[in-house]
Image 1: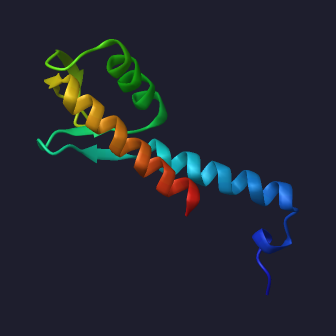
Image 2 (image 1 turned 180 degrees about the vertical axis):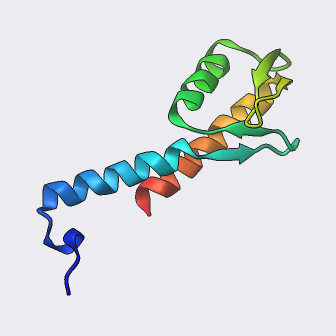
Length: 95
């Protein structure tokens, strides 16, 4: 017996795959080399990218972590988290 997925038009299949990928990206968590766990979803990546773009080495800022705690994060940690989140997102999209 064929499932509904196999009987669906290609456009619907593509939309379902995209929705699944979006859901997976929204769950991304990354752990930096210092052990801090950051949210890695697209909105968090946007925030990290802004800090990396305007910040500089040695800078620190308060950051809401994946466990909802607030911690001091360095520019270097945020830059590393952004790189890791981007890599994780790429892995989701090319899987």
